[in-house]
Length: 379
Image 1: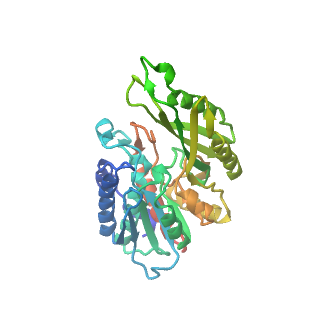
Image 2: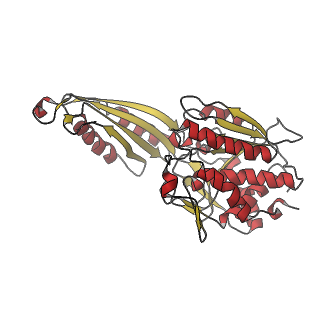
Image 3: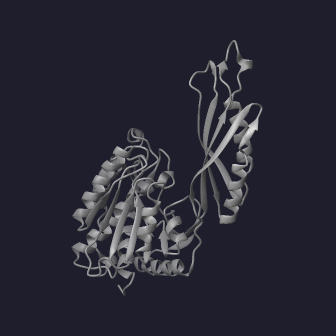
């Protein structure tokens, strides 16, 4: 039996995926993420993997590393890298509960990227149940902090990737079945304006409103966006009482560019915003950066293998560079052949309407299994 003929079953995949989606795991809730890692560790162990739990740090949850038994275990093989944290706070499940409506299945984090991660486990489970062995040893690494830039596990991912010949990232694919073979560079920033507090009623003129100062900065920041480098303000924190002039305001900014030198220039523009004007001090920090990943010969050769597997299954796999960061930025930038966004098809990414297309579940599970059996061999 070839890998693409393995008996994947949509209802079985949905039944296994449901507990993952219903275990809400927002990045900043380490306990919730660890509960999700427990579920994943159990399913990985049930699929035959040797499990290692890696403690979290920097206030984030832990990671799970799963190595599948192989005659060449310990030699360079295939790394499947995914994250189990989501952008959705605990309680989102009440707004977007697990439900099946036609070809759509809904739930927080189902598209980004619990479905893709679960299908990787399902692929390895079916390979083992069929008595097959992948040509190369397979490691699955699930991490807890991708949605905030992977601050606590970047070195873990990079070191694991260096031990392997290929990296597969089951981030969600687009409806046209496009894989990602390159990603834009990304930088994150925090800004703080500091003014002077006063009573907003009887001493308004004595204050120096940090919110007003920051509002000017926000307009300035977003006006810097161009085709080469974009800037977006996504988080604002300021004030506690409407009858007080706020003396502090903080924002978070995301910048993205197709080329590294454009991002580097954007970083300098952001850092140049620091200073003082109208008795309001502005401070700027760069926080986390994802390097640009441009497809090289190794990644393009890996894509051709994936394209061949997809053709055997019956769909056309396309590819290209994409915005939006992933841990493929890190592995691809290291020069390790990486194929990204090969997870479930769906829509509503990062919104209360997030869902997957159910008909992609067996298709993408079969694709993952076929790819794992093709890499390093003739399967």
